[in-house]
Amino acid sequence: MESFVFEYATKVYFGKGTAKEYLAKALSTYGRNVMLAYGGGSIKQNGVYEELTVILKDAGKTVTEFSGIMPNPTYTKVQEGAALAKKEKIDFILAVGGGSVIDCCKIIAAQAMMDEDLWEMEMERHQLPSVQPLPMGAIVTASGTGAEMNGGAVITNEEKKIKTGLFSAPPRFAILDPEYTKSVPPMQVFSGAFDTLSHAMETYFGRSDMDNVSDDVALAIMRNTVVNMRRLLTDINDMQARGNLMWDSAMAENGILKVGRVTDFQAHQIEHQLGAFTDCNHGQGLAVIHPAYYRHIVKNAEEKFTRFAKIVFNVDNAKAGIDALADFIRECGLPTKMGQLKSKVEISPEVLRKVADTCNIIKCNPRELSRDEIYEILMECM
Ligand code: NZQ
Ligand code: ZN
Image (cartoon, rainbow, N blue to C red; front, side):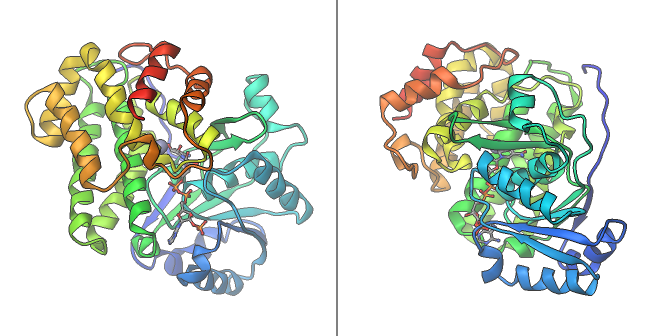
C-alpha cells in the first residue's frame, strides 16, 4: 500500500423512502434559501419533483429552482447557476439528478462564493479555490458516476473544446433511493452501470501492486456490477439489482478503491475528450473504448489482467478476460463502435485525431501511451 490520508465527507442515506424520512432533518442545520437544481425535466414526470417540493415547503425552506442542466454539463451553465445563487443569496444547493446535475452543482457551489473565474484558476493557474463552497446535497435519480460521494466534477468548456475534471467539495449528504431510478431508460441504466465498472477497472489497472486490499475490494465491486447488470438483462425492474448497482456506483468512485494505490483513468481521459468533441454519452463512450485500450496495454500488466479475467469473468487468461469484457458489452446492448454512439457531429478520423491530440495522458498506468497510439486505439473503434 502507498501512504494515504482518507476522510469521509458525505453522509449517505440509502434505501426506499429515505428522502421522506431524512431530507428535512438533513437540511435543518442549513439556511432557509435552497436552490433546487435539476436537469431536463425527468423529475417532473416521475413524481420526484412533487415529493421533494412538499418536503422542502414543510421544512420551511424558500426554494429557488435552477433547471435545464444538460447531460455533459457546460461551463456556461455553471456560470448561469452561480449568478443565480449569488443573486438569490442561496444557503444550500440541492442537486437532484444523475452525474451531470450533481457535477454542475458542485462547481456552482464554489463559483458562487468567488468572483474569480474558477476555470482559469484551476485549469490555467493550477490552483484550487481557497473559498469554502456553498454546502450542497445530492439526491441521485440515475446512478453510475458515483458523483454523489466525491468532490470532482466533470465539466465541458464548449469554447475551448475541453471536457475535464474540476474540483470543489463533495456533497454534505447523498440520498440514494433505488425507487428514484425506476424511470431511467434501460440504455441509460446500462450506460451508468458500465461507467461504474469502468471506474473500478481503471482504479484496479493503475500502478501494479499485487498485494493491495483496495484491489480486492475493486474486484468484488466489478464482479457484483457484472452480476447485477446481468440480472437487469432478465428483469430491468429488479429493484434488488438496481439497489446493488446504486451502491456499487458510489463505492467505485467515492475514493475507497483508490486508497493506498495510484490509479489509471486513461480510458476516461480519452472518453472525456471524445465527449468534448461529440457530446456522446459518457458510459457508452467508455464501452466503445475499453476493449481496444486494454488490448494495447495487456502485455504490460499480464498478471493483473489474468486475475481480473478469473475473478470478474471466470475465464482463465488475460486475453480471454478482455474478450469476455467485449462480449459482455455486446450482451448488454451497449455500443461497440464509434458509429453506434449518438453524436452531435459525425465521428470522423479527423475528429478522433483531435481527441488523441488533446486528451490528458496519464503517466502512472501500466504503460504511458503516445498520442499516435491513442489515435490508433480510437481508429480501431471505428
Ligand atoms: O435531465 P433529465 O431530464 O433528468 O434526464 C436525464 C439525462 O437525460 C436522465 N435521467 C436522470 N434521472 C432520470 C432520468 N431519466 C428518467 N428517470 C430518471 N430518474 O438521464 C440522462 C443522463 O443523465 P446524466 O446525469 O447526464 O447521466 P450520468 O449520471 O451518467 O452523468 C454523466 C456525467 O457525469 C460525468 C460524465 O462525464 C458526464 O458528464 N462523470 C462524473 C464523475 C464524477 N463526478 O465523479 C465521474 C464519471 O467518470 C463521469 O465522468
Ligand atoms: Zn466515468
